[in-house]
Length: 264
Image (cartoon, rainbow, N blue to C red; front, side, top):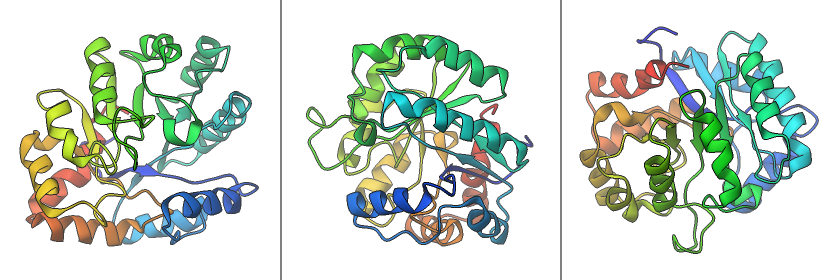
């Protein structure tokens, strides 16, 4: 991957059989009507319009039984040159090491976890073997935050920081500027740590002072552009990112291309 390639690190492209069902679930949870169909055929032209040449595509198994179907779908996306698919895992899945080996053998180098949708806590001890096996090999993309306070919520910035301290060589991307609806805790929890953050599903809601506080507290290379398609349109989110942070074209381009320097 070229180090100057524009990358959307947070997208979803579902199997046609489940796309409509997943969109209904997303809208019910976030109260945000999706702007797209959730299919690659809809995402690809949206990326092309804003000169994004690569997308990280994610899914999350909401039960142990869904791990294999989700990961086989991820592997099937490898045939699309513009897609970097991430696999998924579940702490109750009994053959983690075998499944990680399968993903590795099929060229998948990332794992997506969404504790809030998948029904587990990010500090579940059952995840420790997974993080240990991933360290130095796989990148973790993790949904962070929601409406509950950090201690009660399945995910939060503090839980992400604890993982990074225990597994320092694990490359982590904390979605949603480090914590959806937990933005006020991000700097205190993660400052000084090499944890990447994506820009997805935040710009519509994050207060300006917290957005600027986070952006000023971390090195610029840690910010990765993400749209969270099909909830948001990649081109519209780029415009909103530049407007809200008052970025020069050069500053915007750095964020848009940071994802190409992750080694994925």
